[in-house]
Length: 136
Image (cartoon, rainbow, N blue to C red; front, side):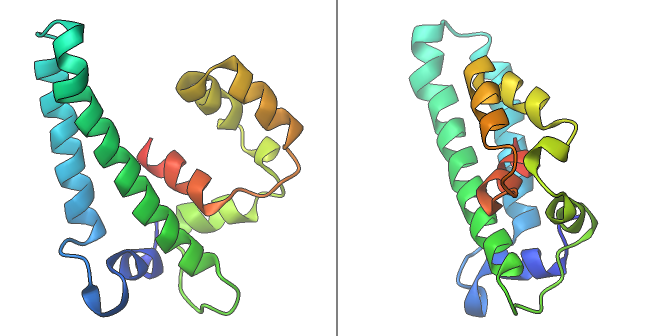
């Protein structure tokens, strides 16, 4: 769904990263599942710094690397293939045209973020936002 161009760009030039996207994403998902089972069993004052914050940091790093790869594919003249989901996302005229956009923002960031997104509705989806939609 992301496309071979994104997967190749995720690894960087000459494979500078040790894991490809699929491996990195699977490790991330395993850590989310592990954190979910451990985090609910511990008191919140203990689970936040020991379990939830490290997973949050890993999600942020994964999204940042994916956003860089999407930006490389979306760069003018890159000649890289984006994949079905990414190409469809790119074809929307604006964020407001994406049906799940406001619902996603309300869920992830609250009503204020969803309202702010309506003000910027005419803007195209950025690589960072595409990565956030893909990773969560």
